[in-house]
Length: 153
Image 1 (spheres, one colour):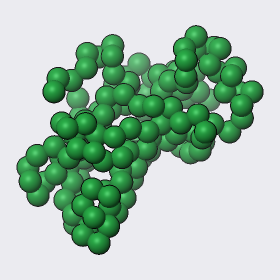
Image 2 (cartoon, one colour):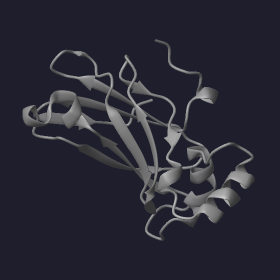
Image 3 (spheres, one colour):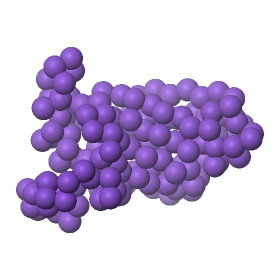
């Protein structure tokens, strides 16, 4: 499977590799949330190559219907996008963060992948800093009793 062109992928992507098989880890449910309001979420499932290039906005996670409609009107798109949130809301982040940046969290449902009784980490949560205008690729090297990650390209 080919990786989508930069203009076709979201600014946050991920990739999961199963270290026990040395192969991609398909069909892992992943949730992406904005740390400023963790109830605002996006979700996806890793493809057969273990990758997620695009996310689906979880409208039911958005706190207020009126605000949701205002944001949709501002974006000119059908749904709220990660790009819109990073660009427009990141600058309103907490004072402790670098100007314009925002914190995001990926939550991988690894218990469903390995079997809840066959893994020490039924969920892997990774929190990271995002800056507007950059692409953030987060690979996860995963085993039933260990994991590691890094900022990919």
